Image (cartoon, rainbow, N blue to C red):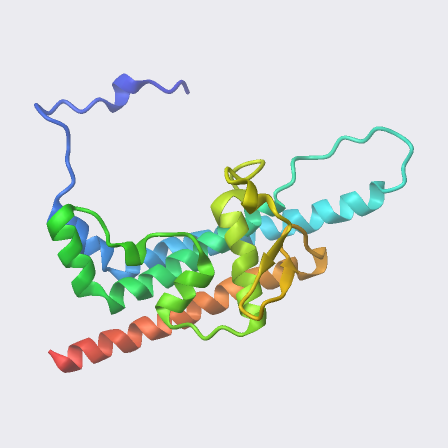
Length: 213
């Protein structure tokens, strides 16, 4: 079926604009954030078997002295969806915790406040109050690479982001530009953990809000 703009033409006198009050309510509605996070987790789940199959195919062709065609890799796209699931989970909690600030900012300038802006998962985890040990900090820093550019572009738009290592809070440098295929499923499990943690915190915040009203 051919895509035709005319089939999607809106015949009103003016364009359909978003309502600012509705926008502010959507921005602080945790179901919106967690729903999006769940969609990205589900997509990563669908991709994981493909990732595993592609790794096996690569192992089987290593050392061959002939030309071999392989399907496009989807590992980076898998990491991208893991990153987006975590980003939405954390932002959902941040929005609930700071709902007054979010609604006030949208009422004034029709934009979400800076507290909901950004893709640095380590920074977002800190804003949400997630306890970071060095392993979780590395996982978040690793996935940030794919959420920002690795799952979308062939290279970063800022040269410093093309570096293969990241410096973490302990002062040491860790490889983020490569990975062991065996740990790939662990990033999906980690995304699930963040989703569950954020969901629980949002429920607690909702109960506290109800009790205080």
